[in-house]
Length: 189
Ligand SMILES: C[S@@+](CC[C@H](N)C(=O)[O-])C[C@H]1O[C@@H](n2cnc3c(N)ncnc32)[C@H](O)[C@@H]1O
Image 1 (spheres, rainbow, N blue to C red):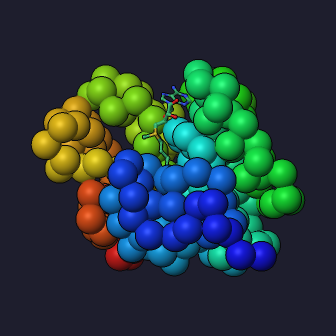
Image 2: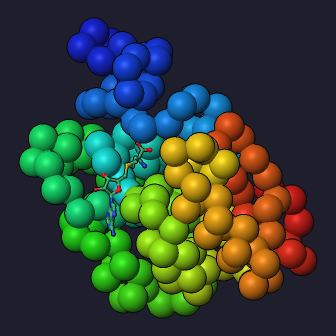
């Protein structure tokens, strides 16, 4: 199906993707492809901060056998509608409406292959999310954070660096402002 309403390309606040309602909030499509690369065929991807769910759905479309879980408070009904439109025909995507931390507390440990943290960008919130997500990752799992070393979001950089200094997690890859963390004994990502 051709999508004339939201053509692909970079516009205004993000990338418009074909077959998705609304933009995603990333500065380059390279980030989308890096996220996809990290997700095993039948893996589990978790996104904290779904917004329109277009990033989550991009991953879902490229990893149709994977399970994609995207959480957002959805404070804006329009964003919620766009997210619902996006997941409607994608059976491998589940949306959580509410604080992502509530969902994380319900998940058993060691379930995610990839977690993409892109929610509240303030330092203490990122630190909390890293700690919560870290417990839910498989041994070879990767935690990705958006806006690392972005001048507008010093809290992301500080919290990621502190988390790496205090835990077994370390930087294993980078794509634009996406930083990829892996456990120190688990190889590059
Ligand atoms: C920058 S946007 C996410 C962009 C999206 N990841 C993408 O790739 O297009 C940040 C989102 O995080 C959500 N958010 C912030 N704190 C949250 C929390 N504690 N739980 C769930 N969602 C949260 C906001 O509602 C907002 O939609």
